[in-house]
Length: 81
Image 1 (tube, rainbow, N blue to C red):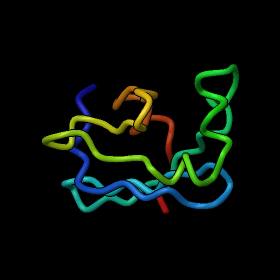
Image 2 (image 1 turned 180 degrees about the vertical axis):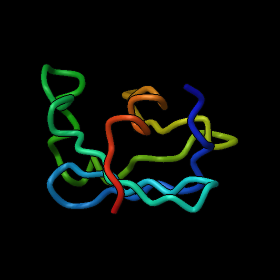
Image 3 (image 1 turned 60 degrees about the vertical axis):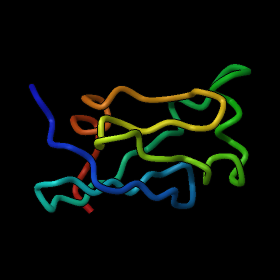
Image 4 (image 1 turned 180 degrees about the horizontal axis):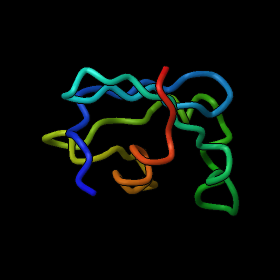
C-alpha cells in the first residue's frame, strides 16, 4: 500500500511521534518498541528523540545518527490523533 506523503513530524512525550500527512490526517506513532539496542536505544534520550526530522519531499523521517522507521510502518502502525 502506498502511504500519503508526510508534511510534518513532531516528537512528543513518551517516545511518540505526531505525524501529519498530505491528506490532512494526523496520526500518532509509538516509537518505544523500536528503541532497543545500542543504536535505536539512543531514541530513549528525549533530547535526542526530539531531533527527529522530515526527509526531503516527505519521504520519511530520520534522526541525526541515521535511525529511521520505514514510511509504511509509520502510516500503517500509527493511530489517528
